[in-house]
Image (tube, helix red, strand yellow):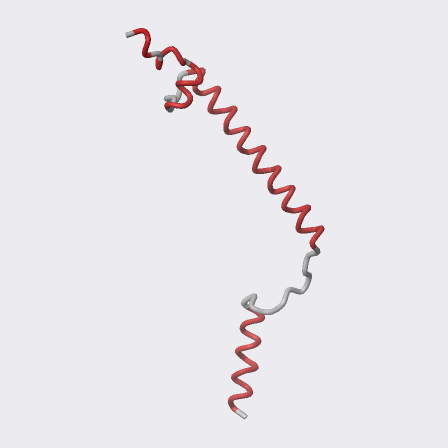
Length: 82
């Protein structure tokens, strides 16, 4: 009888800790909608960061990496000038 009570207590603890089944499972359509929204938010955030970085480069507040330097000033990499 003591083992049964221990098992019941363990099951209750697992359910309280999130180990049990969900009370409100989401549908596939809800998941896809959430995923599209999350991807759109991430894309907007990346676009904003890219815009801010471009503004900072134009203002000279940050140093350019090699790719950015090549795209903005390709003459720096022209070996025919030597």
